Every structure is written in structure tokens, then in C-alpha cells.
Image (cartoon, rainbow, N blue to C red; front, top):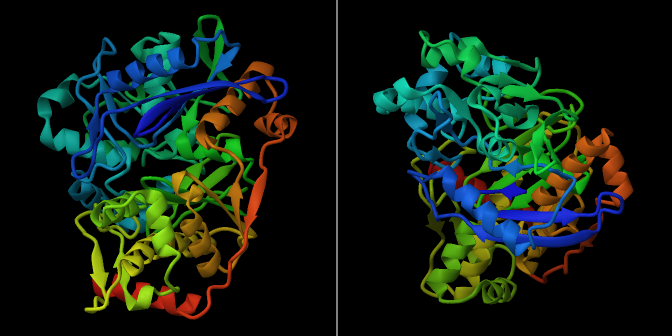
Length: 469
């Protein structure tokens, strides 16, 4: 199961061959920053519809890959107290700033303690917001869990004191350390020093541990969507995974934990026992969707328009921070358009929107490269990876080989891998090899004649980014 921001998707695979048997999906309510919230009951309703669409099959095992960071708060009976605050909610930005100031060396201490510096996205900032903004809800709080934890508990019927999580998702909270494998009670005490936090967070399962059963099927530990995608794609050390979805992520698998006091690179764990340093941007295809709407065209036509003009978009530069931004940390920022002339064309605007998103993600790649091994290749996934224009611009602007994953639903596939791993009690790597996952298609640049060089495009973008900071 992939329980994302936009929808719940299910994918059923044969445990021996990995062949897809059936799929299903159902949407979630639309939500946008600054107040981005959803009712967890909507996720379960979407799962029931998606499962029915897949034919309500009998399965041997199931796991959940879920949107990370979201705050689901439960009372002592396990009842949801309020709608879940999602990863892309930016109302909590003031709390993130306040939390950083509570440690003597600020961001450096946070990075050292838990691998990440607080930003609005992290669960700990949402907890601080709840403590500050909704005292009645805070008094009722008995357990704080993540979306995948809650969905797993719905499957297993776990009581509130039996809810579990995994290291991949726990590492995105801002109060669990991938480096030590432990909760950081002192960081939680910053939010509320009078609460006994030991019973208020879920138990962290290892990669092969089982959360329970659902209709006699084994329920795996589950994990966050980024860790699940890495499983589904068979990402290895030196592979840079760039997901072009509503938001964007840049991640890789590492044998060692990372610590970045700038806050750009989050020191997450993966779902196998290794690590998953990651950069996340709030804005990716939401930007090109908006530009397509303004131009009155569909996405295929936006692709066509973008490829009708040369690199550099005739000097038009778009900063894609439409709904605030996470990296760099600008929760109140908006988009900027620079270089407008009276002869500006639809083609230039279309291409500038794609170049802006790609430059933003390549900024993330640069940050990641400072803290991990040198990148060997970039693997593109997500809805944007199906765009010819996105692929072409990446190939033009990135100085390492670009490939596209031959996989439609990386998160759901990763959840299948974990389910099979838990069922057979074998490492996920064995399942990945058995199923032959990890196939890619190389992207070759067409060598556009004329226009700006890759260096000039990125320099113009960086100048606008820094000028508007």
C-alpha cells in the first residue's frame, strides 16, 4: 500500500516472481499549504476503495509506505483527536525556528542529536505547534504517530499502546536518531518537559519484524514513502534518486549516517538498516501544473511548448517557490519570474517553469553530494519523470548520467518488497534480486542548438534565488 498525500494506491505482486497481479487506487481530499491537513479516516476509506478496485484479493502479506512527517494524535482510547497535520503544512514554521533556538549551538546541536534540523515539515515542529495552539487537544494526547503507523494499526487492530513504526519513518520526526537508533527524549522534552514521552511514541520495529496480521496476512513494519521508493527501485550506494512529484526529493542510500547543520540534508534511515540522506523541496510538478493552467494547455502541450525553445528560455528565469519552500528554508516565500521582455513567448514560459524546478532539484543534488559519496547516476521517478521535457532538461543541466526508472509505482512496489521480505524472513535485497527490480532507461540529450549553456542556466537561476532570499 502507498498512502501518499494525494491518494492511496495498492499493488499486488506474486511473492515468487514479483509479477504484478492487480492494482487499485482512490484519491484523498485535496490539501495545500499553509494549512495542509487531512482526516486519517479519509486514508482508510481510500484504502477500502482501492482494495475493492483491485478485486479484494486474498494476500499472504502486506506493508504500508506512507507520506512522511504527518502528525496523527490519538487519545488514550486510540481515537484521532484532530485532523492530521501533513508534511507540507507550513503553519508550523515559527515553531521550527523556536525549537532550533532552544539548544545552545542551535542547528549544529540538532543535526548532531537527531540527524536533522527542525523545519516546518518535521513532526516535532507540528507537536510544538499543537502544544502552543490547541491546549485542549494537547491535554487529550496520549500517542503521536505517523500516517503509515496509523494505517498499519488499522490493519492489525493494535491497541494504542501497541502501535509500531519503523526506523525509516521514525527518522523523519526530528526526535529519533538514525545514528543511534534511539528516541531523543531531551528533544521531546523541549516541547513539553512535564510529559512522560516514553509511552507517547510508537515502538520502532526492525526491517524484518512483523507488526501483526490482517485477515491472516502478515503485516510488515511499513516505512516512509521515500524509504519504500528506494526499496522498490533497488537504489544502491552512488545512485541518486530524484522524485519529481507534487514535491521533489533527492536522496541516496548510504552506509553511514549524515549530519548537516545547514538543515538542507536530512539524516534519515532507510528500511533495510542503512541510511537515506535526503533533500526535500515543497515545489515540483505543482509548479508546472500551475503554469500549464495559466497557459490554458494540458501537460502534454506544456511539454511540447517547452521543447520548442532553446535552453535558458530567452533569459526568462522562474524561481519555483510557489508555496513556500523547505530547502532552502523559506516557508513564506512565493514564486518569482525574472527577465520578462515584451517579446516573451508561451514557449519560453513553459521551458522556464521546467528549468526552474530542475535547477531547484539540482541544488538539492549539490547539497547531498557534499555529505555522501560522489554520485554515479541520477535515477528519475515520479509523475514528472514521464515528461519528455523534464527528462531533456535534466539531461542538459546535470553533469552525471540520467536514467528513468522502468517502474510506475515505486512506493507501492517497495511496500510489496518489504511485505515479501517479512513473509519469507529474508533481507529485502534478496527479494529485489529475485524480482529483478532496478531496471532503468538512459536519457540522452538531444543537443539543442543555440541557447544558454548548462552553467549559464544554473548561474542565472542561482542569482535570482540569492537575490530574492
